Length: 419
Image (cartoon, rainbow, N blue to C red; front, top):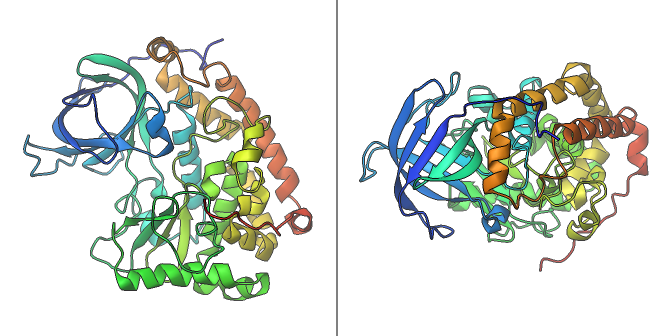
């Protein structure tokens, strides 16, 4: 069965030349970067390259973060516009999408998240001025490393303060990320821990004492609030509409990692925090290892703290409090989204167009060189269409009358001790 709707496409090619054979985590190397687009246009640069990701580091095909420079000594960054409508940037990501043989989930889901933000008048103004409302964008490419074909990749914009409209000079602009499911990242402790298992500061890379206080103010409010206290005071600490969007989006796409292991929070004023969706390849029925599909995946029940129940935020106390405190607002938002944004045809067309842009020839070439891609026999356009239909239907059942259904959800879950 074809992977896509069937097409033959001549994709852009990225060529990396340099010492990449034994690249290790947190290590940077200088290489030559060449991009040849299908229309013949070329980008030539030097680049500092490093491995990108956490869970994906163990896969045979790696993700790479690249920063482009104009010379071999890498003194001057080279900002280029890789697609029409994008802003110039020197930072990009080459994503292997190794667990997702369609290579479509991450970018299509990011585009859907940008719709959630774009069509919400309460979104932070900083996101409006930047690319795709804070969500990554990208396009498919073939990758060659030192002359050897490595298969199908996507070349995407990079997460970070520029994507999110944040200023390096403004100390009230902060971005943090949860690195795992723990009592700390799920808001059961009132002081944020920054280490490999708990929180990571994305911008700035090291927090000042004042910025640390801002983070702890946010974390402490959530960990210490009852539902009544949260409902009364949340507007002082959070952008509630953005959290409502995120709660719905996480349930709709079944973004399991997005509830704890990979959740990004931003503030632009030291006071009001909000989430951003990122790294969305384990969505629409595909489990994180790419080997099995939800809902048949028993591993979901064993490997996630609340057994795969995203209705209760997978044990995330912040998402629990949002659901319990604002059911009417969540229900109203769902009805708005279902009019034009969350429709079966619209989302299926996004996937169809994304996969047509790859081309069946490139899928098959990728399978030849990467024969162990775990999901190649269980996901394709047909499976995605079925997942979209099922997950929209399930969320209709949940959100159409959420003011009633919220009382059927068990919110008494307590996160496990950090291992």
